[in-house]
Image (cartoon, rainbow, N blue to C red; front, side, top):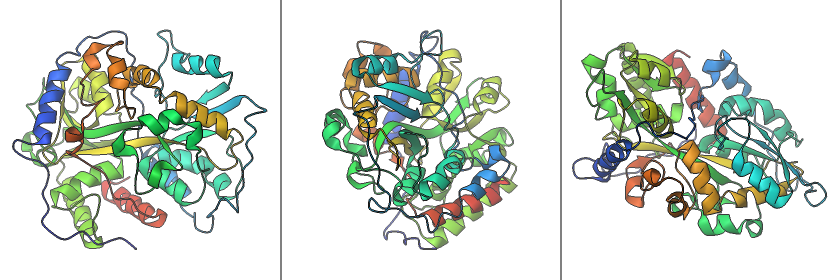
Length: 426
């Protein structure tokens, strides 16, 4: 496999002592102390499995995602026609429970306002239940330069990278998105898999750390503790998202999750096998860890930040920990696929959600990291308890305690998924 060698020099397992991680952990504890019982905000708690949706598909997801060679497209080989001027409509595919809903449910206030302001009718579909699962739905059309029946879909970084690398998205016109140009946070402006954000716009971002139930166990300070402490044996879960879990395992062996060699990957897999064989892990999950963690069937787990905020509203015993190894950082990204008929309409929607006032309304509901500058100031008008929450508005110092999983080509990522599945028994 064509993977780059790790950079030379010493490697640290993560911030320790008086570090960004320590400060972030203290800030999170202080913020969570203000959240208990806060009414009026819905919960975002649906399966966010990104790397191994084969668990939900009986093994079919991974196989369906293979066989993509020979389907490369370019702007010349797959030309799209925009009829936005003639048709004021838009089809938008997103993850479930990832858009603000009315208290009664069934309607989306910010989306309704967009339609009123622009006259663009939006068909909003929550059919992205997992990256591999969704990719299996659309890969044949994308590879054949055919319409997917969607004008926007939202995928996590690594899958977005795969789709963009295939030449399967339309290049965006920043002239139609002045809010994105002005307000996209600096840390997300130039990912290696989409330099300059020519083909993608972040929807929301999130952090992966540790959650524990203080009713049943004391603090769990590190990923290493999570997978080795004897009192936690058989009472923890890890994520079925390969990049999140293996990123932490790479940290355990002293490697950089963003840049590692074949030998380091093999060593991390061996470490993962050791963890599984020890009986420490009760199960591998999407975010279906929430109910058993609340009940105490699990006492600690690898967890996503937004889920923990939502759980904290009802159960103050649920705590979020910034592991000493750091936290995984990821984004879900809006893209316009080839053969989408309403590109300009899609760009209008992206621009709308980068208005700081609109972004604040969305962030107040979904509780994930907001990618929009100025939204925190607008949040003060909605809910002051969320202002300064580092899980929604992290600072640059906060993000210094994070890492991402290495971007790879399609074949390598599929191989990683396959090997990880084999180790965890998926």
